[in-house]
Image 1 (cartoon, rainbow, N blue to C red):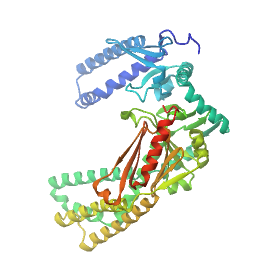
Image 2: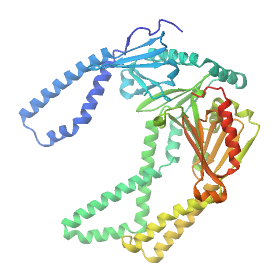
Image 3: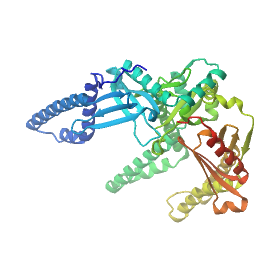
Image 4: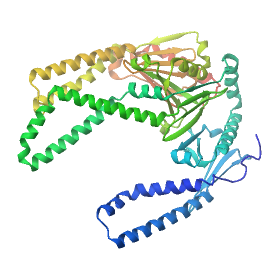
Length: 507
């Protein structure tokens, strides 16, 4: 390591003044936009407009001065003697943050549209796993970002030299050691948007449309008696099957379009590149993010797909990284649009010991869990029939209400049975794997030595059948499996033993 690199106070890129200035103006706009809109609508006088313009000019000058002072007071450096990265900022009160090398968990880059225009990066130093929050330098040149990231990650590796080198040597000996790059193109993003779960968006859009219709209906009924006939006719049309079908298809199309737009904003330019000791993931249109992932920090890996996506050879990988308990959502990397071969490459790189597995035991939940699930899905039917009978708000005949309820019950039972059959837990020599899902199929994998603790509980209704619920806790989240027989307890002890005797670094 170069002992002179960044050992003195460093400022951000000079373009950082512009970034701070425009970011501050945006915050001010978000706070006072309603007041500005009111002034424009109220028809202000010429004098008011002049004073408003002078006020905005003074505000802009003050913001520019503040931006320059903040830029001058924002400094960072590396204290090699204390083995810390230090950041100081603040105009009226100074905030000093020192991060020991061994607390650094990840260093990655982010770029908003404005940052791309002025050609700077945000360098984020993630201290997940401790009580500290992430540290961000929002305006740093690409050269400095790469160099500082390399220095900090190297310093982190030296603090955990023995376990890390063991993992890397294992990969070098057993893996192909090759480098590969995978890019997700526009056509693949389009397939993701079409085949992903857009029913949530559909329900929100449908609820919004129905709410607007009800409010308009109520408003005009209270004020315009002469259009009563129109509302009666419109209500009759609305209840017709043909109109509801057309409305459903239109809302479905709108939901798909919204989902496609969201996918492009989040994942445009998605690129995955494997090097010798890490995988780099870059994605994003609005905010471009680049993350380097090392196997030691991965806690839980989840692979999702559904029959449509599987037919299109599309899989989604969710990587849960080591984090503090309150930051689990932030430390999840979601990578969609992966082919089956790419998934295998990622799995082999992150879990090189998976090829050594010599045994595995599969556990399935008891049928009591199935009966409980079926009972829960019957509750909406009971509520529907109660509303129909008591309030009369739902205008359906007795036979129509019974037919709708019967169709729902049959479909719900079939779905729950298929989902129950797909649920299983596999415990092998070094890994734990959980498979679930009837339509959206999920496969979760974690290494035994990364398990921090295990919770086993037995509700009173489980005692007669000797069933328990098991929860495996990791620094990246929990893996739960319910209503399994007590035959799993010896394997729970084995998992605890593997976690205790391992000397590998899991952070």
